[in-house]
Image 1 (cartoon, one colour):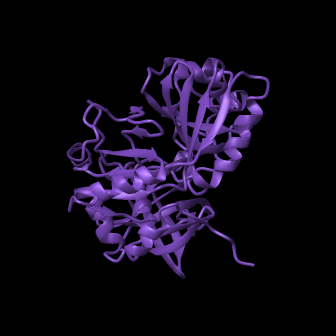
Image 2: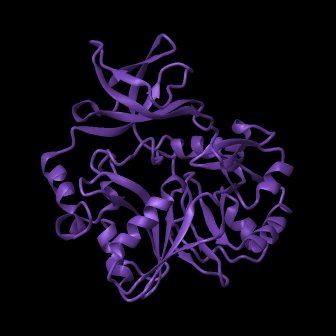
Length: 365
């Protein structure tokens, strides 16, 4: 029996643009448009790409114990966030496995917004509600269209249609109108914005956006190649409940004081991993030649022993060569270390490469 996929609220707009659709995290997603993945990727790097990411979930957390709930659910100190400040963080299991990665934005003394991944949204909401039992706090999933406006001309374009974007810096957010939520963030490595808003408002906003010839729809395939060039993790591939933040090279997201003193779910397990050291680490990998090495490909050392796994892989249109990420034993993660993958009966050499593959172009000041 085939899976019944959820439809995006703007499904009709994507159909009208000739989108090719595919299943992702239970949703019928526009994978690409007639101009093709390569052109969409380059367009985002050079102009403005518009992504429909309404499969992702906005979750409002409000109440006297909202900060306590988030500090318990995540290895974070939200009390250190100013109003309008966003922070990347994770939900952990008791064993310090990554349930999901997410963005938390402080909107007020007792108000926060969480952006969760599509495939994990239902579990995330259940997780938060379980942790909220007995607390004066409201966990509210919101029904919103969610758009990502990404690229070097994103600010200029939004300003031109009357949406003030210039006052936000990277990882800052606010509510420009009732029912709207906007941050300067994204998952492409480029400057850009993410905007959650009611469907009718979204349709009106998009009409204004597409007056600009610099803006075009971008599908899921180019979103994936863009985030991989930027060295960003995809939950379910690069990070999973079997992956801890130390192995995933995500400890930069956890403040030192929280590592040592935080009382978050998974704290004891994470401290043990920090003390003992991770047995493997996430790395960038550059395949030699033009053959991409994709997710699931096993990695071998020069003696033919399997030592790791590729978790993401594609061709990088900006860097003009194949790119991958994966996990290797910690002692083999130095830049330039050579490993091998078996792809369609051939042995493909790869070398450990620094991350990201392309420079981040966030506006931080």
